[in-house]
Image 1 (tube, rainbow, N blue to C red):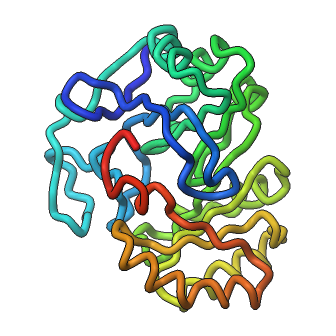
Image 2: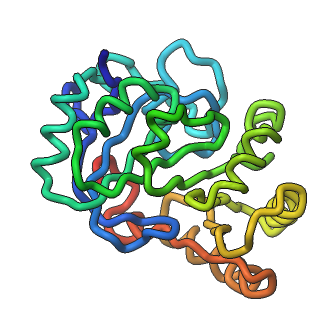
Length: 244
């Protein structure tokens, strides 16, 4: 059983230590592991190298496709766990791609890591199996709105959203590009009774200027609706780069 990881350079798995840049754990030191492959295709995705491989005709705004063998690497759960443990962090963030596509191997990885607080970042379309769920302290669920380019029939599954809303470990992080996107968030909040305290609105963007311009109008919206504002701290600190 192997994990399929993204890479920072050909053959180098994207396992690293950094400051969490988004959501309820923003600012906390963490170990990160970025898994490859995704079941959705956001046209603004900032990690398209995890899924937009040569031959994939799903649209992405960059128009770039990636050579698979240079951007994927396979590791056993034990080998990945050794690299994570060597970073010396108390918190692990599993990100992607969509990590829950690799639930069996991910479960094996987490079973070998003792004493770490585990967060999984997910698009919310896949239910975690019980063996994996028992090992997770926090879910950072990022449902994809219409402006992502994904059809709601794939990205916004009512059964899954209802389950995440009822899960107190799940925090919702919505990527917002225009004020109109917030209306879609509010409609989902009403439909699935998502508590305001577990909703984070985050501006879409991969440069500081774009983020600051969008946060300027997003902050008063968060205030008006009693929602949380998430920055993208890692973009300010490191830019749009791998392994950060």
